[in-house]
Length: 154
Image (tube, rainbow, N blue to C red):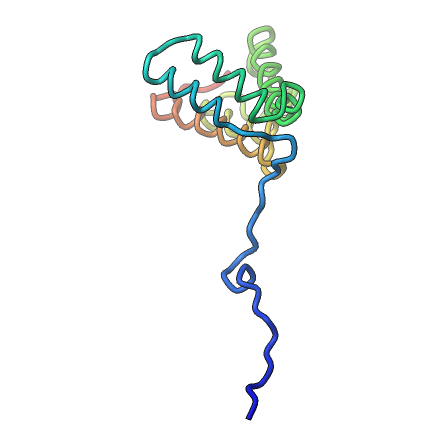
């Protein structure tokens, strides 16, 4: 008696969620950058650090133009944050908060204000680079809170 025929099983489908394949288009080898970074770590040689960064951008990422495009959202978020900081320095916190539709936060603890600003400057959702920028800002706010940043923003 012949065994019943069964459909082939896709191992990736059987083992859980689909695998995410990183976008490597334009990316090359990080080997030369890694060698230079290791040399810097061992010796502290600044030329090795510069060489590592240069090779990371050139060989690993695919050139300065591609690196700049990949970091576009992080750069834009940093620019928005700088704009708010400049507004605070020039016009005061209450006016800067009003401009970003957060006037009700004037006088609240700094951590509350910074978290709300984060939602305006770098909202959740979006690309991996946006998530990295957001995570960096969250970690900075957390560090400030641990150091006792509890003053109110006025």
